[in-house]
Length: 55
Image (cartoon, rainbow, N blue to C red):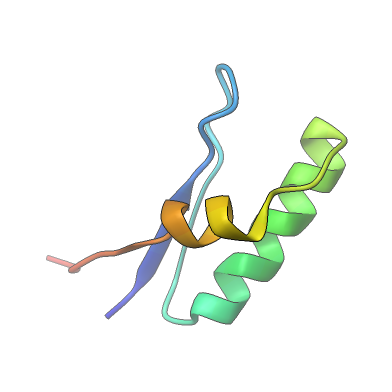
């Protein structure tokens, strides 16, 4: 089942979907570092990842 993360920072529209939770985590960390100039707490990252069903 695929994983998804949607950035909730301000008006940011970043969304990542992947079959790999590790890939989602890696790309979210890179997004937060490069776009928002910070880091994401590991607990917030885990809470933000959703498992989704594809239609």
